[in-house]
Length: 220
Image (cartoon, rainbow, N blue to C red; front, side, top):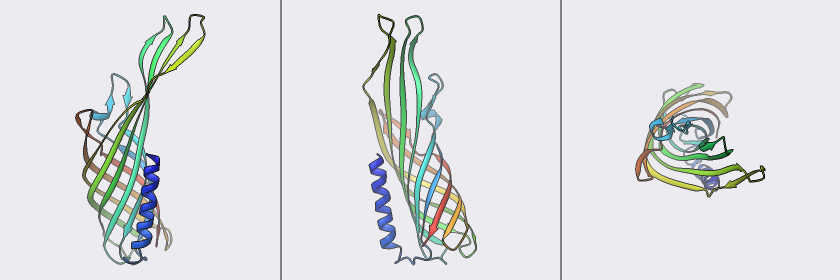
């Protein structure tokens, strides 16, 4: 998955460098986003196990292509989010035996759409955007059995790792604001909602969600 993200970033940068001059470099931007993605808790939270994978840390790359004076920009973005929870499958304090597992959920989103900037000529740029989205999700379980052997010595046994994945297409809508620090540097806040359904373990599951992120970017 990490190689996949690196490859996408490289492809986006290459696309930006090749198309940017055509769209007039004074308006094209690239920014790094970092924040939190919230998935549907009904799909990714289980109070009986004390496990909640619905709150994920997210890191992404966002690119715009357009004229500096225009109010409309074409946007491309990729974002990766993940969370890991530990839960105990079985515990027997009398025999000192514990079976536990680390559960990791990772999602990756690709977004393609248009962005409308309300005031492209000032140093404060509120905007709204929307478009198509594609996402993948992968859940992995790594188990471990801990126990004391017949001599009273601690030991453990790693269980086989199991994973399941799914993907789907959907849409996104969003809004945000950017503040120019200089002619080439800006920062801001961004909010997005993605609606994407994937079949995971034979169930229709929401792998999109709501995200709130800070961003730091550069103009070209």
